[in-house]
Amino acid sequence: MSVKIKAKNANNILQTLSCDNNGVLNTNSIFSFQKQTLTLLNITLSQNQDSASIDCRGYRQLRIWGYNNTNNNLMLEFSDNGTNFFRMSELYNLDVGGIHKFNELIDCPPKYVRISNVNAQMTMNLYFVLQS
Image 1 (cartoon, rainbow, N blue to C red):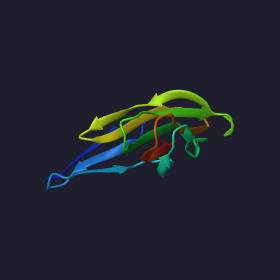
Image 2 (spheres, one colour):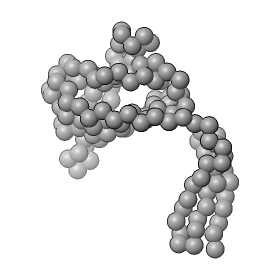
Image 3 (tube, one colour):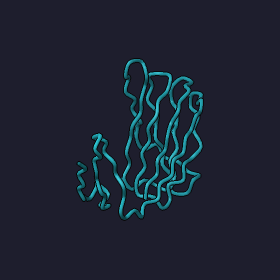
Image 4 (cartoon, rainbow, N blue to C red):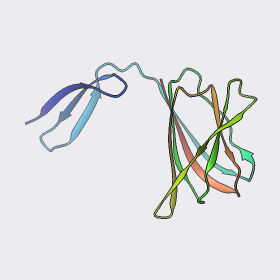
């Protein structure tokens, strides 16, 4: 026996949620006008070094997640022109069994975002998910 429920998700997008006979939950968007971009930065940043900038123009949400090899936080820098960046907040990591994870959600992101390392050299994998 399968069950179907129609509901709006957090982005006000109507979705059909269904569960098949094996108990597996399936989700299918009925109306999906969203644009999504995934950018992966697999980088090593020296002390006082900045990452490449991420262009957030035209998107309404930015999620940054990933992990690094040290227990140090990173700085988030924002810009309206892609040239002059300002340090606006800190990207905190959480030590989960020796893996240092990041997860940050920014609604209405600025036009450009980059990561700045003010600590010792570190290697990291950061994913930037932009959604309109």
